[in-house]
Image 1 (spheres, rainbow, N blue to C red):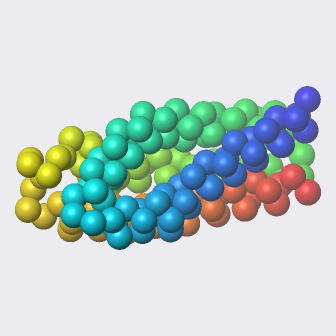
Image 2 (tube, one colour):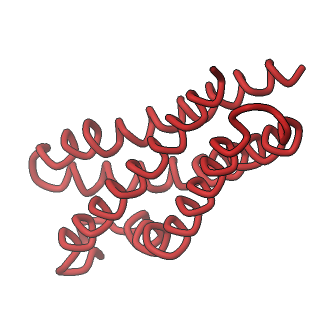
Image 3 (cartoon, rainbow, N blue to C red):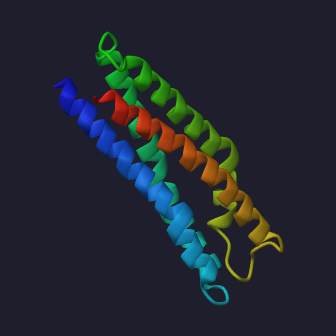
Length: 148
């Protein structure tokens, strides 16, 4: 049963990493290249859509890692799982303190009501997001290594 939990956790975290990687290096670049207000409208919609899904995914991933760490405490790789869990906690804290406030503002913007510095705020969100992606990639790598 523990093996199934381990594999399931790695898959869940891995897909989350893939989504966040895609946002950082594919979706946002596509949106930034769109003409006129399309990119900003796309970011607002993406902020609403992913803003509803990703908190559940992050907390769910963290819960799975915590269960894995507790159930496999005396198995090889436990330290890797605990470290991955610490990195996922860091990613949640980063999200709450740095990214969510910007996202909460951005998801309400339209071309008519957005602030003059909206691009700078989106660029700041992107920079924080790159760091968060690196953190969750590291967590994923540790979990994948703990499987062996």
